[in-house]
Length: 459
Image 1 (cartoon, helix red, strand yellow):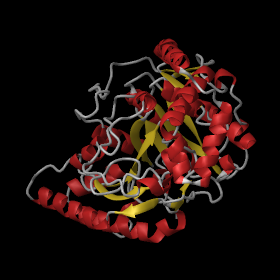
Image 2 (image 1 turned 45 degrees about the vertical axis):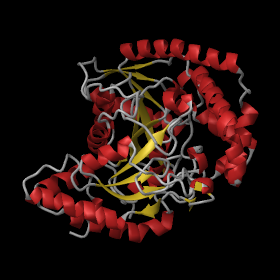
Image 3 (image 1 turned 120 degrees about the vertical axis):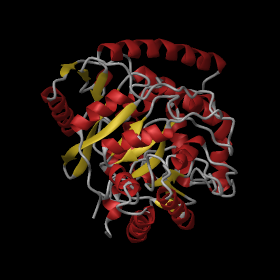
Image 4 (image 1 turned 90 degrees about the horizontal axis):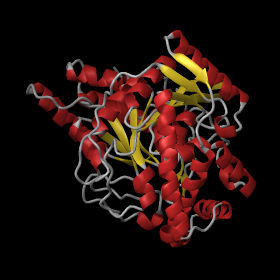
């Protein structure tokens, strides 16, 4: 079977565990696919061929001995370059970090290995993982393999492009302001931002994370099927003492009412007509499956976005502003300047007020999501952006920020979010976002399976 790379992760793991195919065959098929399609989109910027084949052989040997190599036995995956993988530089898309070699795996990488996943490469991100577009001065430009000319998303743009092009059925990504959910949307796949504390996080190459990252940044999976997201999340969400924020919450919660809030224009956000059509189509699928769907507005969202930007940029001014200048990446410098133009320079009192407001907003949202266990809403207010639009002008950048209110605001609240691709509009991928209360990824995935289907790879 030369097309083993085209299977889903769940299908691969099943065939390998049954010994119908070998982990080496699947790995070789995937590496051949990478050879064929990666030059056209530059999703994977570092290869792990020898390590991958050795891991596959170890899995085959374990199965031959009757041992259990894990639920993701032999599944090829990729890791984002902002996350520690032993022996590789955690570049975060930066020339100034090209020699920052990880001495050990991060928890999420370690957990994927323990589950039997085979790491085949590392995927691109914009400098500082700071954009919804993926280009940097170190690794170059990642393009969208599904629709040339539109962004692959960011900052997990390499991850989304890799999955869409069939370079592994699942990719690791990170999300502090939409960096899993938006790339999945732009590349026409599915992506899960888990709850804060669900997947342990730690980089030995940068152990002292800013408080904003501690409160908002998470790791999660991107895939072509919802079942693969469920499989991957379970593998990723294993305990690790290096992350004090990790909580060993059950993967399956208590039964909840099958009731969804349909929010077509959250907190007054402008939303394009094709996206509203996609939301109504998703709502119809839930209704047919027996869900009650109620059209309504959200608790304060714009305020959450504004507070997230205050915290985010204040920390950048304190810790990364000089690094932006040292890196001398024209895109990164321009984005940093654009952000400074729209965000106040916060003092200590403003930061204290921001954290106090976070608790108030979290209470409001938890109450809302208790009444409506799932919120159905846009991923973005616009169809996927033209590539590199964010560096065109300050006005373009501000229009993008306005369209990404849900991408920025929801992480400030620590909530999980799921992007589900459910069609196309004007030749572009279109999808919807599902949101639930903290640690209720189970109901997100249940609802997502009713809305989305397994997505094909590019040719």
